Image 1 (cartoon, rainbow, N blue to C red):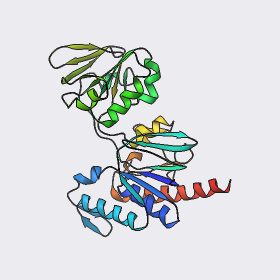
Image 2 (cartoon, rainbow, N blue to C red):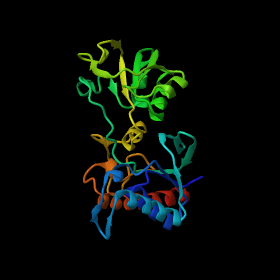
Image 3 (cartoon, rainbow, N blue to C red):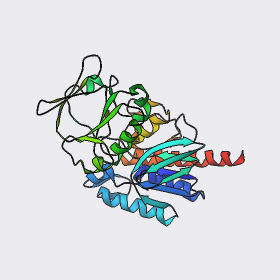
Image 4 (cartoon, one colour):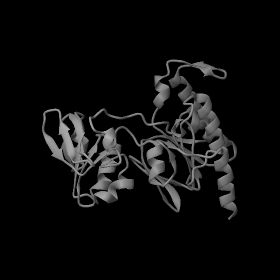
Length: 286
């Protein structure tokens, strides 16, 4: 079992890994591609570097691997705590006494009339956080990937009915998992004081009590919130050492807000990695 799991293989995650590895910790790093770095044609504002974002990403992973990190390319679906932190991916579950969240910030969204107005009033981004309020009620999950299926599977044990809305995307995976699926493009989320349903672009309506958004992959803030970590808006709240209010849970990089730059991510990753070392050493003395 790893002593430290790092979720995210960018500058923040790799920096945390480098400090932890050099301190002798067993590190598992779960990464799912370069994210925002893939859109950086060339990075020229980081000390000693002038390179495409994808090249910097690959170099960081190679550096961590050379120091002994176990690096797996997997999509993380959820993070739980039951004595140790438990990280569920699409193919496995991994446990460790400490975790660093470093997946960047989640920018996957959708423009729908009424969506922002009804956030917190039937529109939710977290099945674990809000599913309890929809026991026996009719809900829908917007998405088509593994993360959407994971959220829908959690909800079907609580809600009266769960429909997956793919908004035009492929329906095969959701149908194979046994869900009711509708792939028609969406026009709006409806309701006055709370969600009452959605309307498709063809004019048809679907009555709903709750509308859960699960586009793309699970973000760091999604996972942190499910554990009860404090947020600053959509970002994870951390102290100067990268620690959240949950013992053993640390965060670094774009998911904490502020300057969304490589230099800031590397600094926070180093701080989070160092703080994780101290936490684990204290834990081992108990």
